[in-house]
Image (cartoon, rainbow over all chains, first blue to last red; front, side, top):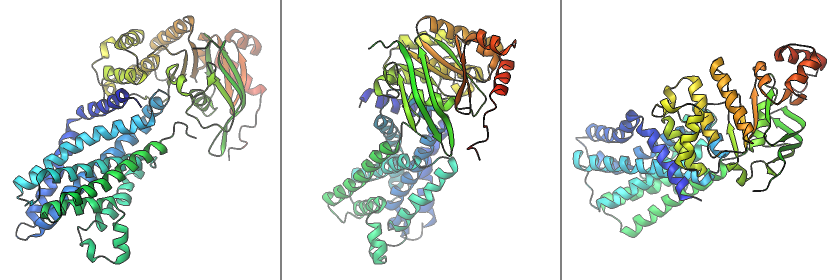
Length: 244
Length: 247
């Protein structure tokens, strides 16, 4: 493992994105726009107070998943990955380089989304704001790592886009946004316990309502982190230097 | 760094891609400093052979030894340069950003970037995005990246495809210069005329080496005056089972 090669990969990915200002603008602004739309849609009800915190988990998660999986697929398709794998770059350096680059973008994206939801849309957060931000961040990083992992199984752009409904939608459906997890059929509740997004939404709701202590939220963060770490390791394992 | 006399030694290499045998029981040795042309129609196994040498191809059987070490082993990743048929540079980075990233991965300094930029005549394009360059310029960026760190073996998969004759000639001049400096080059092409620029010629078809010769010998053996014609004559002499195992 070389820190230098990892961070030069991070720098390279960020430099690529910086040459594309429209992508940067979309990445940073779109989640806030959608959160604003939800707030407006439910402006005469208290629905936004209930689903608003979960929105903070959802949009960064989905967008980072998509952007990351497509970016790494592009690397496979352009031949640059094959070049890198014939060079002294470790697979973990490659995956971590990407994780850090998109993780940094996720930090910016989540910060803007949280600020917008709280100060513009008037989302009431009873717990500490920094803790909310931490959960949103962990969630965006999770989206990044899952995207990296998923792209290993996609040969084409069409396939990689299909992974979104496959990997992301069930987590959204079972995450407790549409129906509180406690009210689900037992089997679905048990499944939802094994999906990382459920824990992210639990944690965000806990911070928003200040219903649990920091240890509970910390535990949820650990679960999200474990899934992210698992996806990074699996991503590195499934990245093959030799292909058929 | 050990000094094996051979740059490359392949014994009984067989590679399957899908249901096809892409390379069939192939033996090959290259001496250091040789400039070797690998010719053959598309689908003849040139790319698969090159991928095997670089160590990114899964092998069915046989051994590939590069510079005295097993192909693809970590120490070789500093010593072998590879240009794939794809552009394999980042189109959304400038030429300099591309080269400095690959230089960092290889652990070589900025002086190396200046050297390869001069060798590939890219000085005027350093600040341009690779995606905005012409086809010939992009292939030179790709080649420049492969030259970083002065590899001892260069494996170049169709590096001159899409280049105009002047540029092609300049690049072959560069290859010759590198070979004179002791670098071994394996250059694939399907432009038969490029054959005449090599020390040694390998003609591939259906995963086998049909002829291992020199440009002059090839013309003499086939009684022809140019490489393209010579290749056709050779194919007629070896009416292989083209369609076998390709259903």
